[in-house]
Amino acid sequence: MRESGVYDSNLSAEDIFDAQFRDSKGRVVPPPELTAKTPVADTHCHLDMLRHPALALARAAAHGVEFLVSVCDPTEDAAYTYRELPHWRKAAHELLGAWNAELPAGRRTTEEAPQTRVIIGCHPHNAAKYTPETERTLKTLAARPLTCGIGEIGLDYHYDYSPRETQREVFARQLALAADAMLPVALHLRESHADGLAILREAGPLPAGVLLHCYNLDYDTLRPFLDLGCYVAFGGALTFKKSDEVRDAAARVPLERLLTETDAPFMAPVPLRGTVCGPECTVFTAACLTELRLEAAEEAEWQPQADANDANGANGTASCVSAEQPHQHGSAHLRHRDAELAARGLSVPGQDASHEAVAILNTIYETARRLFDRSRE
Image 1 (cartoon, rainbow, N blue to C red):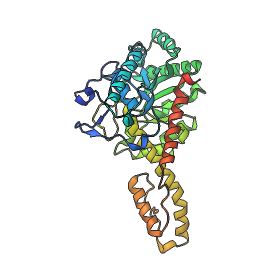
Image 2 (cartoon, rainbow, N blue to C red):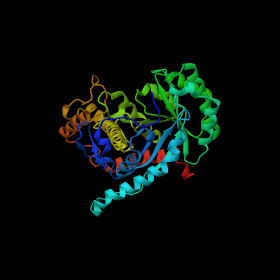
Image 3 (spheres, rainbow, N blue to C red):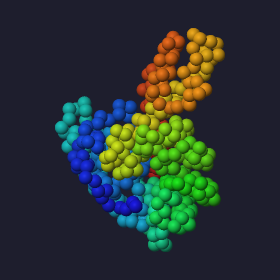
């Protein structure tokens, strides 16, 4: 059960005050090159659960995570993050300055901590603790300029820490509050998507937007939420070996609805699995998501050309995606495709995709800022 406070871990890497990524064996992991030229946003993390929030902010800034959203719960010590965030940002600034002082001029990074906003909402685990006093606290904190949304709220039928009927009632109340406050909503739905969708429909329009946080299921489950106009954020699960259906869903979501997150300190992405996740880890998920989008675009560009050549008997060679072979998103499939095209004497699409990658990352980042950055209003 999630509770405010330190996320206890025995991993010493969490206590090393530098900007390096380290895997579960303490080995340094280089950051992905794909995210080096554009800012990234972490739309869902729990700074109050990290052992060193200031260190997390400094690392995020050093790796280009320029905007992040931290989560609070009014049934817990919700004021903690609001109270401590200025101190965390100041300490992060000092850390960044110290790191830069040890680097040559050409390798120095920003010394500004990421722009940070807060969402507040009663997690479904805590629905049984929701009282009139909780709601008053929620409304008071929702009115603060630092607050950019209501969340994470929803239904969790996996753990059932609160009775399901109570979860549904508290979810509906908070949706109404979000509508009144004109704030976007961050949803937590686990083994409860059908009921969650029904309650969303009953709630009516939520003009400020709705985001499915940490999506890790297939496209068919996601599609009705997209039909309602929801956004969807992908975290570390996107990078996991057995997450093919999640990657397929991510490749099919309209680009303008896509967001990135970590859910830190949980679900560190590959190649950092088994470590405490921080907001800086967003860059690995962002890189994975961008690669998926590039691959999907390349496949869409290539397939009509390949089909036409096959229909005309080009080189007498069959298509590398046969009727028996399921369509898939992945580098192995693309390598097979590229070899097939080369054998036909055809050009390989997307040979220089850097500008397309930057465009994808910029779109995802700007979507996060539009949805959650009230300072831009």
